[in-house]
Length: 321
Image 1 (cartoon, helix red, strand yellow):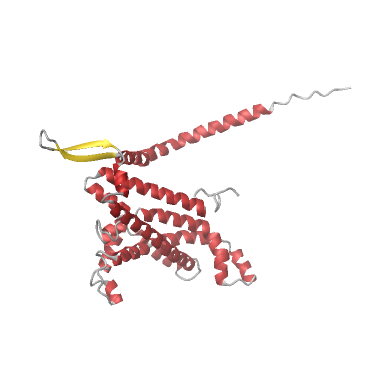
Image 2: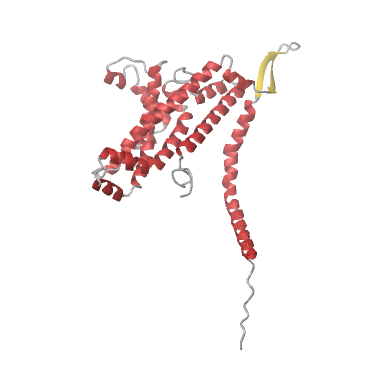
């Protein structure tokens, strides 16, 4: 009679310990590989942000020393720069810049999204010369913004192409609502192809079998667009709109070149901060920049939470499927 002796089983805790050590080693290796990138980001992004916030709390006052009779600057730490944003003489200028920034963003992104989707639908069709059309559509987006501003400034001259086509004599590049419209038109012309490009990428991810099944079921073009095309292209479109919104909130160069500096009708938060810094009011300029940074962060947070922008590739809602 023989007996079989079973080898003692290794405790499960030993396997889990080895797995934890392996995961810890992988994590340390990943941190080592990412450390140069994190260091560069800390230097070029983190340090300027911290410096700007610190500078925004430094309040400088100019006065005359009664003893020497010379002008002296005194600096102290306080919230006077932030208090001046919402009260005092500069409060109306700040709210005007805030309103211009917001209206440029809302109106511009809306029009650009509509035109971008139309461009994507056209470029997604199979026709002769489609590659040439795609390349030509991206030309405005590839032109530097300063060059675009100069181009549209020539178009919007008193005797320019715009007035010739409209049979008017509007001074587009002066103060007024027409200046706001001129900046909006130039911005839409330049950046609508960006949304169109990303929307096209989303359309090309939709399988053709889905459209064939919809056609068999008797779905018309309009219903197919709302029930199939738009929902399936939504992740790419939401990310495109988010990136465009964040870029529009920081608008500076186009109104600066096209209309000019410190223009009431087109002044944005970025141009207002630049104007304060150019007049050596660095504390208030840093305060305006900090408020703009918080405004952009709030818009991005709300946009991601409400619409579920897929920034990490985990689906439309940002959750694992």
